[in-house]
Image 1 (tube, one colour):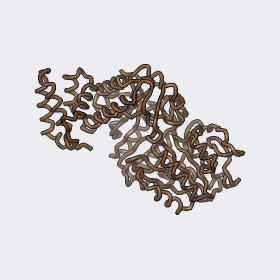
Image 2 (cartoon, rainbow, N blue to C red):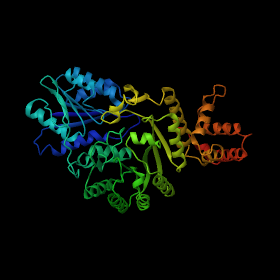
Image 3 (cartoon, rainbow, N blue to C red):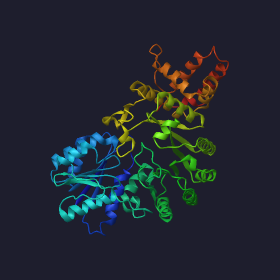
Image 4 (tube, rainbow, N blue to C red):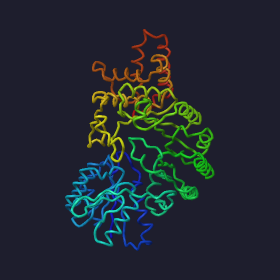
Amino acid sequence: MRICLFTINAKDFNLPPYGIWTIKTYLDYYKENYSLNIDVKIFSFNHESDPETILNTIENYNPDLIGASHYIWNDESILNIIRDLKMKMTNARIVIGGPHSDYKNQRLNDLLLTGILDAIVVGEGEEPFLKIVQSIISYGSIKPTNGVVCIEDGKVSSFIPQVVKKGEIDYLPNPYIVSKEVLEESLINGSIQYETSRGCPFNCSFCDQGHKSYRSLSMSRIKDDLDFFAKYRPKHIDFLDGTFNLSPLRTIEVLEHLISLDLDWTIHAEIKPENLSFEEILLMKKANFKSVELGLQSIHLGTLKLIKRRNDYKKIEETVTNLNSFGINVTVNTIIGLPDETLENWFETLDYCFNIGKVQIVSNLLKLLPNTILFDQIERFQYEYRIDNFNSIIKSKHFSEQDIKYALIINRIVDLFWNKNNMPDYIKNIVQNLYSNKFHLLLIDISNILLDKNHKIEIKKNFQFLVIIKLLQNHKENNKYVSDLILEVEQEYLSGGNNIVNR
């Protein structure tokens, strides 16, 4: 049996698609155990790939079974490709899966009923896809099983959740060891994506991982994997775990092993700052952690309750301070448009992020993900969203469409004037002296300058300095610090800030 697994990657993503590689690895690793005569091929297409190229590539391989990896960013493209594939390859069976394949999705059910789709995989893909392969070989058709929805007796079968194996997940083979192709491609691109755990003990309503039980590789397996990677000396390791530092003992043991390998690679991980001790931060520095990412999302108490989150602000601030002191870059994530939040609430969150330390602030417009609690609460919070824009919200009960558009403008200003401008000290000083530490007030003033049709400013290299100087001049008569701040900005520009490029 010839099996094709394909995906269309998100924009600007150039690494191997880890999800479908784990499925190929699983099939290749266990095919002898189950006496399966299969050949599995991965096709990874970029965001700009021509549909005809995708169709021809898959058709030329002539697969018996096609697996499509479904995400919100490729939703429309994947469904269109599936329809065209079925017209061209009527005998091939087509299965869709991935984090955002939902058995309740009427569009997917319609594709099942019309014979375009043969099955939907919901949840983890390795074991259900293996069962599909076995079913086709044994029975000549796909039978319903845990995590697999298909047509049975002329109608869509009932959904039976997967029985997830508890405990360690060492039964999942390392893709980089089993499939040399993914190792070589990753090394060429300079980064290894590595998953040491699955699931999440938390239950954030907007996240598609929260309802899945947390499981991890054994420590001996993690060490073996890291030893394997070390032999090839990759430039960077990106831990894919939802929370790298969930268990202090586990975290310390992993960090100590990374230190023992004594390599000059850099490392990135997502962390829970409340769980991170000073000892762990010290070890992260020694292990060459370049950056960490943490999800604050909001500081609005009512919203935090609705999305099932808690924040320990004292511990967050302490952790960020310690990470800053060791030169580990920190990115703080917030979400625009969470339940019961207003534009003003989001501004308060921006102010908090700005004042906790030197952190990049990344705000994403809320995306309503299938298989989440929040997706089932769309009517409650009066969300309107666009399927053709990654399920991004248009407006909500408390966040108008106009406010959403303005928040996106402000978010772009944060990126240009703060994140990509290397978080300059002069911005900190301006906010402190002119805006009483209210970062959003500076952002509003910048937006007024940029949106002023009478004073057009060309968006080019170093334009940020021109905008800030103009802004300061507007304050000159009202504040004794302005002259000093103008001088500081000019000195920054002359002493090397002029090399900043607006990317």
